[in-house]
Image 1: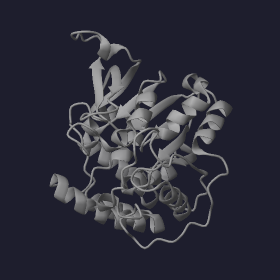
Image 2: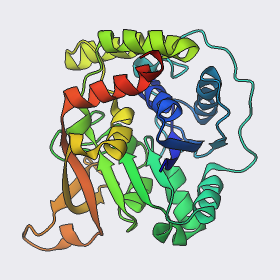
Image 3: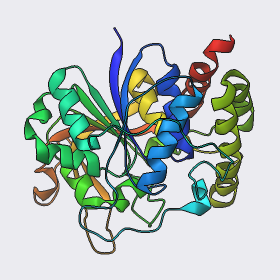
Image 4: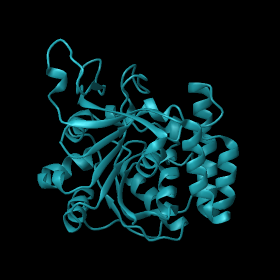
Amino acid sequence: MKTPIIFDTDPGVDDAQAIAICLAHPDIEFLGMTTTFGNVTIETATSNALLLGELAGQNIPVAQGAAQPLVKDKFPAPAHIHGANGLGNMDIPEPKGKALPISAPQFIVEQVNARPGEITLVAVGPLGNLATALQLDPSIITKVKQVVVMGGSIREGGNVSPVAEANIFNDPHAASKVLTAGWPLTMVGLDATHRCVLSPAHVERIRVAQGALGEVLSGSYQFYKAFYQEARGIDGCCPHDSCALAWLMKPEMFTVERGHLSVEVEGLAEGQTLFAPQGREFLGNQWSQTPLVDVCVNANGEQVVEWITDVLTAKAS
């Protein structure tokens, strides 16, 4: 049985790596991509999503979504991390295809209603599309199979503030709605993704195996790796978004705890994800009022990176 996935994304170097996994994995039914602002503008996100599918020779539907946060002012895209075009400033062609005539939230609602109990939403950018889909049709809470969110941080600290991870910080109001909606949800945040380092040797294997798409993955990786070398002192990059797919397909590589999530939406701790483990008593019960979810608190980094590489080199083996 294949796993039907809608991939909500803001490509982005690590998004491109994860999209390649969706395109390559034999057990993933890739229903479509929904795009959001975040690593790049919404227009660039949509263009990149279309192009990445085309480079793999696949016609994957793309629906354009959130251009800005629900409430807060939008911050500039982090060109110093992903490049101005989201793919390491590589010289890339314009995509031939066009986005669907419906919005990303509409696409999510339509697909989930057409296949109740089957579809997994994997969201690896700011969460406005999922939040708006919930507003359009709250019944999808009971109709999705599961929701996997790459974002947040419990014990690791933040990557855009001392406490906040980028996807949650970029639209904390949307994140609050999505993480506390009551649907079956797993958060794969920095506690897990920072344990994983995709090395130059892994990426060279991927480049060889992935043809035209591999050249983009490899070229954009060089730009991304330079940022990580300076920011974290590692020879490689953390493949954040691919980790969400790794958990979905191989959850045994992760350590998961169940509990209650909440999101700070303003102030110095804006974008912080707060986690109260199930059954643990605190002074007051305000931390435990939200629905129970699963949170990845660790990962076997070597296994995750080998899995990513194996998926993306399977054609060559």
